[in-house]
Amino acid sequence: MDLTLGDSVSISAPLPYLKTADSMPMLRPPDLVSSEEVGLVVAIKPMGVAEVRFRRGVYLIPIDRLARVELNDND
Image (cartoon, rainbow, N blue to C red; front, side, top):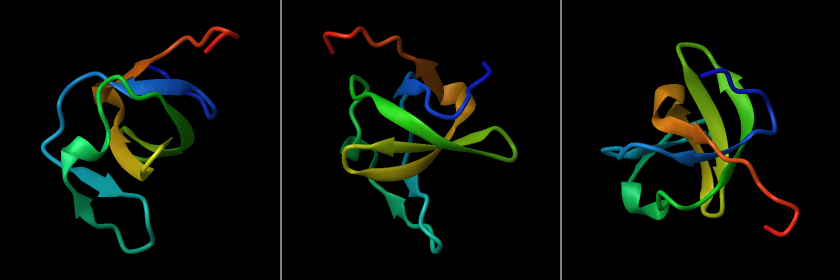
């Protein structure tokens, strides 16, 4: 899947952990982001990883674990 900056995405497959996008990354529990939560792609990193901003933080997530979400004006 090709992502661009500003795309709305959600997590499509369970993750064993979340990795923060901080300058000193930390591993966080996967339940901080639900599969229904919509995030915003803020950067595309090498090796198929996207930096995604969710309600509870910014995380590095493999692109193959993301699904693009089409938002309506009512959302």
